[in-house]
Image (cartoon, rainbow, N blue to C red; front, side):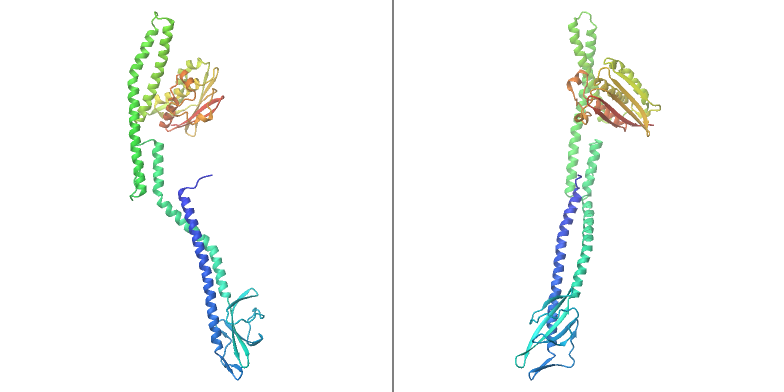
Length: 450
């Protein structure tokens, strides 16, 4: 499962918190508005009943209403009942439950026929223990309608509002963390390009990201200095070793030509010669790599890749015949590219030599060269011992050898494939390996064609 980015995590967290807080506030506001509306209606109806009662006059054990008395005022209907609950004056609203009992001086909510009403009853005594009731009735449908409309609007508006808040928040967070993205991109470019001389651009604001960029630049500076010292040391050592190693090789070859030496002495000198040649090869490869890391310029010219491959195969035929390995070349025409002839020869030499060293006796090596989509596609395929999957990603590392004892027997230095990948990258190409242990290995590379 793909991990969420920090921007998305922060956006989700703060949007969720805002949604909970805002939702709680809106619910409380609706409840408050509902309660305030009910309270206001209670005060209004009780005041209206008191005002209506002022129109009633009591005299001689009876009561009468003034002539201009109205039983409806601003949405409130008034009714007069006797002590038994019988309606004397006024009209009961439609859908109002007539059996509602009288209850003095207490505003109440009454539900009838899916509609709610607010009522207020007030009792008055007169004559010989006679009673009359005044009831005020008003509908709270407007309050209910307002609350229902508000709830429906919230169900629509609230999600849209949260999405809008989330989108704005994500944009703001993305803008605030844009420098982090720039740092990541620049660090990746420096890492992939392996150019430690580059530095991160510093933001204008001297904040935490400015400090982080400065620390990265300091780290790159120390790394660059460290690698530069290592490259210089490798170059110096490789260069200084070439002369003494060459002297050892020449002296060993001279001694082997001396007929006065015994067979045992010659065998020991031959061992020294083999190790000296191996050291010479290692020194040469290290020097090539060191010069490359010092940005030495290479002569790029038009090359016939097919012809160069033929030359390499011809040179390695003797080595392949020692193990009775057959090398075949299958190539198309017009395999021209821009490159350094010495390095391309070295690349093919290393790949085919590697196939011979790890090939089986009486085996085969197939070199296939063709053109695909303006690219030269090459493959060096063998039916040797193969490479286990756990080692495939590491074979390009310097001095990494799967079977160290066998590598020594074959004269391997552990730098061959590392050099191959460097040469391919230098020529804007790509290379990858496919292998099955016990069956064989294929190195497939691509170069731009001209």
